[in-house]
Length: 146
Ligand SMILES: CC(C)(COP(=O)(O)OP(=O)(O)OC[C@H]1O[C@@H](n2cnc3c(N)ncnc32)[C@H](O)[C@@H]1OP(=O)(O)O)[C@@H](O)C(=O)NCCC(=O)NCCS
Picture 1: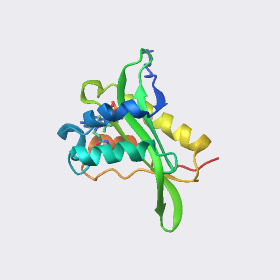
Picture 2: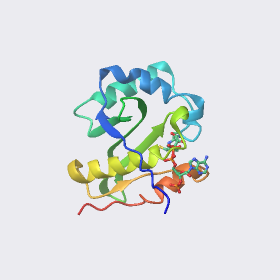
Picture 3: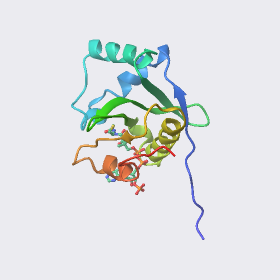
Picture 4: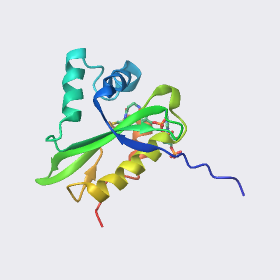
């Protein structure tokens, strides 16, 4: 039987020093399916929103056991057919892609939302032509708190 490799990641709450991570996840290769890169001004505003404790948004950097920051994920409030819910998003930096880290990060964020989230549902909205994102979201179409 083959050895099964399960990547380990930690989700660390985003902090004031994470503007650079936001700049990295803003590059064209990372935003192709998300509407393209934002301006520096938009990024700074986004960074502030990510850190705002009143924003009903839990945002994390994705960190390997050795401490390398490989991406980001999180969840925030939105509404779906009149019901309050969470929406999630995720990004893994290009040099770390293809190792199962997005799946590991998404599973971790599902666990986090399930234990401390504010709503019963967690949604993701991948664009229809984004194959990798759709593969990941196949596990995630809807999430029901137990
Ligand atoms: C989408 C993204 C998060 C995938 O990250 P990743 O770490 O490479 O993904 P994983 O290695 O965990 O792979 C996840 C699945 O997608 C598949 N996959 C990854 N890249 C793929 C590609 N280019 N084409 C087809 N399938 C792909 C993998 O085979 C894997 O499937 P499996 O679980 O059946 O083996 C990454 O490409 C990214 O950050 N993109 C930019 C941001 C973005 O678009 N985020 C998504 C919307 S919020």
